[in-house]
Length: 307
Image (tube, rainbow, N blue to C red; front, top):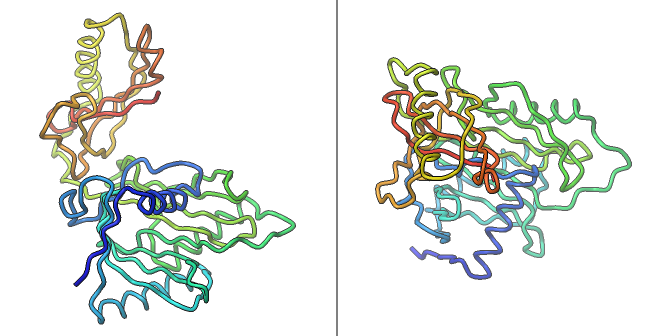
């Protein structure tokens, strides 16, 4: 079995740009890189490397049928050829199977990807037909709901809708919750073209560890965050005003301790996300900082920042 490895040269950068443009057709980036259940950083590769391998004949046939059903449900164009492959994607730290639909000239018309949870990503690459009008916001939401329903993709929350600056259409999003707690960055996102046709569908969903039997209280999380913030302030002329604390599922990271070699990144954990606004010198570089306080034991398991 041959394996094609695309590194971060021109071709790798071009593919990364295509994938980014597709996923960012909504006008915003993903809050977290998709990692399907059962995959790991070791499996998907570290760094900007995309490994492509052929599938067994039976698996390829099943995948092509499944991709065809997905494209039909979304109203994607039918081409003249199909290329199926297994991908370990170091760009997005994900492992998935992919089918590219091509036209008579061999140019891609659409890309459909499946991971261990099902449909991961679908995007059409043909140019939209110029139309005189634009589908309404309500019409876009209904079109997105129908598309998700036809594919059995669960949508759990009230839709958030934004105008798409890329093609003039709409972006419809549904955030994910589990046990009533939002999962940070997880969502179903549908791009609706100005003519009302579906341009893309992406699902971001992460593994979750078991929730704590008795999460610590919001006040305790704020107090623990306050201690950490005061420690930082004591080492500089900065100060931090806590704004909010919300219970969320988050991906642990080493943002506040980049020298760590045992970064706790992996399955999402339940944590209090305590946001604070900096003042003083820190405000010149940061608008907001978020601390992830583990809801089980109160430890700092990472965070986020807005520059």
